[in-house]
Image (cartoon, rainbow, N blue to C red; front, top):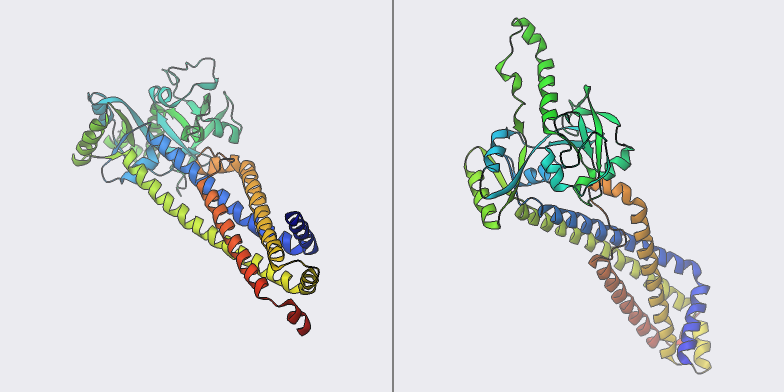
Amino acid sequence: MRLRYILKASVHSIKHRKSAFLISVFSISVSFMMLCAIGNISFGIAAATVNRSLTFPLVVGPVGSSDTSLVMSSVFNVDKPDGTLDYGIYEELSADKRVRSAFPVIRSDSYQGVPITGVNSAYINEISKGFSSLAQNSKADDIFGEGGLHCAVIGSKIAARHELEVGDGFFGSHGHVGDEDAHEHSSFAYSVCGILNPTNSVEDFSIFVDLRSAWAIHHAHHHHDHEGEHEHEGGHEHEGEHEHEGKITAVLVKTVNPAATAALEREYSENGRTNAANVAKTVRQLVQYMNKAETAAGFFSYGTLVLVMLMVFVTILMAVNERKKEMALMRTIGIGRFPIAMMIVCESLFTALCGIIAGSAAGHAVLALLKPRIDVALGISLEPFYFTAVELNGIVVTAVTALLISFAALVKIYRMNLTEEISRD
């Protein structure tokens, strides 16, 4: 009976100060929305990064390139490559008994800000889960084939974002994304010959073309740049005219075992011609940095939560001061200090609980609404309704702070002489 009265009195008190209650709940909700975003986006990036690192344990690139740049540009397709290396490196790795399979990669062009990657059909077979749509004259197991020079294979998210279908044509832009000298290759059109099934990885946000088309485009581009020079020299070609042909930016390697990965990494990092990066090792370093960033952002959000709860504490104390006469009346009819104090505790905990529920629900709903934009912008497949440890820690912080606030209010009520307080007014 006493508990029922306490809860009823708490609800009556909340109704009496509805505006303060709603402001408190809103403030807690906003803080929890931040925690939802931090937790889910960080988890999505980390999951995509770790999963991708398991596909290709080793990547070999040009000498002088950093491990991070090499992995980000070749494995995750989000950074500008540092130079090129000879196609012969790929052939050398393919013939090595310690290599299960190797895949040459070239990056140079883009479409609407999306990098275009030159690969071979074997690479598409390796990373794809089949095609959701395929051109009639294309073979799924040899997508580029002999006549695939203008063929483009696109990820599911890119197809949806740019409303591209099989048979649609587009032009690539010369240069990497963000380059000042980037311009459209209006003389070389690509045609979408296949749309990949969703993989929930970087492939969903990628555009792949035949390795040979990248060489053909840049051979033609180089020829155009030197056309006047050729005319001046009587039409004779320069030996450097074909410098782009036979060049790649990296080789993605699947080894037979971890020992082979370590041995190849050492050999191709010390030969003076190339640099090799252990993808798993590089990814672990990246994840550690991401975890630090997540922790820093989390502490900021937790601090915001504590400040919000202090605001709640102030509003509760203001409510206590406003209701001195009401509490004095309660005392005169035999209600002790403890039930009155518990009423304040219930108000504080109920406010925190409403804020947590509203903030968590709103945060996940907003993430679900923005999922298409977040996926494309960050190159991940976000799980908007995944409950992360960051949110759990937020609940603990909020609950503990609410209990401390309630205890402080309880102490104030126990020390307050209501008769004297009323006589002073």
